[in-house]
Length: 517
Image (cartoon, rainbow, N blue to C red):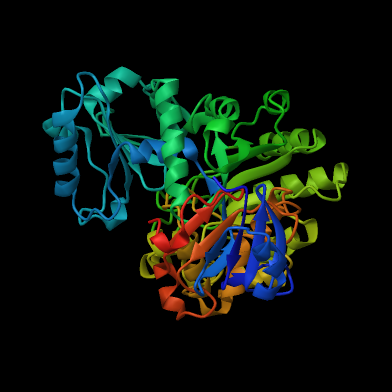
């Protein structure tokens, strides 16, 4: 492994705030030593430094995914992937095939099933799963991770209380096998996760990191623990040296003492103030247009949220909370505003995650309070059907879906994430989606979209002095691309190949060897 080398003849987009570009750079002991023209490296070439000719390829700072889940991603990589599935017959066929090779007593687990992409427009029922697989417990997780389907054996093993909130029931009171918010994330998922051995979890964490590396990601914000993976925060913390990327760890609980006791500086993530749009549990001021008796679900009272945010803020922690739509955003935004007013902190960098359909007033207040928006542009690419969403929300509300330009104009710093496994790791998909936003007024330029996954992402974790741009002294986290995302047609940004991902200067192969994924 080289401890010093040169990259020359490249198109280096430094993201240094001045839109500077360079031809060459020197890396030494994992850090950037020098950035400039090829001629600026002459003395190092003469001194015999190894040289890699980039042959015109583009270099960016390594991508940062600011919202994803190692534990859940690892589960998906080890389970059945239902992304893109169109019929329940395909679901049943895949479950049946997995059951044939499963060890006795092993769970058959499937993920990323979007019921609205199915011809039948619903989740499978327990009797249907029983007919395919009665000898193994089965759990199929919705793409939103706010709903699941279980067979009878899984229900028997997990033994959810008869009055579990979110459990769909038949007229006779018998469970259908479908469980929604809040019962799915609060009871079902932790019960299944607790049955997974630590060594299996750790192997899946590494597998998730390796998948991220193939997409040019060098830093992962890992939102772990809580109901989605009890104990996972501690497992990640104790094994950071075994993970091949830089990790920014969020303890996904509301326990301030536990978080401070672990030596962590941030709390939250998918602490779900509300549910999910796809499950009709995202909390709204006004009802869903196609379900006029439903305004979604707030999972906490205002008093509970105020107390959590205030305690976290007073303890000096950075706070992030999941809020999909306006009513949940209001609950958390007001809690943050109160905490900041009561105990002013100049640089808290609290975040509201997802922030999919805020009001304009909420965006303006976020800008004034310095509250960041943890956005996932790939949601639009993978999950949003604009015709369906207009039926749910009406145009007046839908107009403010993922309002990137409005946020930028109001001084709201946006970070880019995937929420993997809800959508796959893939910053280039997110960048393309942000510049081709279906609402033209909210589109970003390619450079603005790249900032979400580089400089602004680094800022969001107080890491801007070390990562996020290509400047002397910073850690050499880099991604080499086959083309320049600011020059190719916007529709082809996601087709750019990841030639090489470099973490802390580790250039393991010649980038000319070809794409990593």
